[in-house]
Image (cartoon, rainbow, N blue to C red; front, side, top):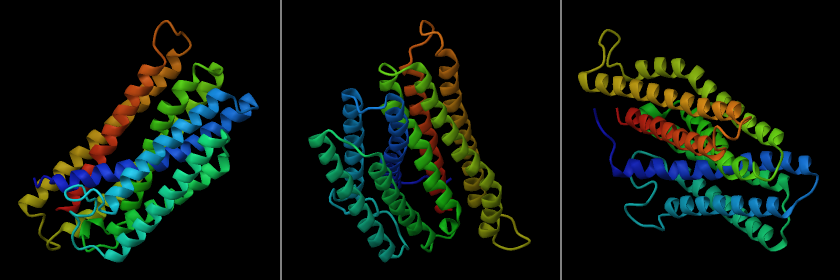
Amino acid sequence: MDWIGMGEWLLIAFTMIVQSSIGLVLMSALYIYRVRHKLDTWQYPIIGLVQRILLVSSVLAGVGLASSLDLLGYPFSAYHSLRNVMREWINIEKTFAAIYFSLLSLYTLFVIITKRAHVYIIAGLGIIGLTDMHYMASIYVNSTMAKGININTYFLFYGAVFTLGPALALSFVGWPLKKRICRKLSTKLMMVALIIVFISVTTRLIEQPAYMEWLTEATTVDENIIFPLQLELNFKSAFWLRMVSWCLYIIAMAIWAYSLWKGRNRALIRPGFPILSGTVIMFIAEMVNQYTFFIICNM
């Protein structure tokens, strides 16, 4: 099995940082919209929470942009390890990453100063982030890496946004607000996260058979010859790693569901522990999934 190197690990970290920022912004817009309409006002604890959310998202976007623009230098340059890619796609992605970070940072500063937030502006920033994610995935789709040229790349990149986003939103929004708002609304926030993660994971799972069939054809040397030994080992390793990631997704969602069910009795479980543990497991699952993507790209 060809293990990926340090450069690919940094690329995975960079990608997940950007996906986390975008997902957090999108999910926070949705959650804050629900909270605002439930409370019918922007109370100080709520606006303070919005400020922290936007600040964390800006920091994540800034780290991603710095890595994308090579500001951190080798070996922390995000695209240093990529070969056989079209530089124009990287330049487009860098442009949108800069736009996303600039607007998000300016709006974060505005919210901190004025103590006012606008849900639709936050959602708009998330959409700009999704556009950046499109071009980030397009770098691989339009490269000469045979295993990257498939719609599965878009499923992977966008799916990560809608798994990491709900996980972070639960940690930064759902759990802190549980101490300030009614339990009914807190339960609804957790249900929204579960539904979105379930849709994201299920969609990718449904798409996998078609991708694996395409991958088999792409890596077959001849119609009557199966994989060479190394390719076969890599293929099997990638399959089992994907199974591990799916199991971790399920475990994370099960923990959140367990918290939802047990939340009726606060004496039995602390409300923050299952949320945070589910978030950690969700990140590990996503890391394994993206690690598998790079193994396949190196086949």
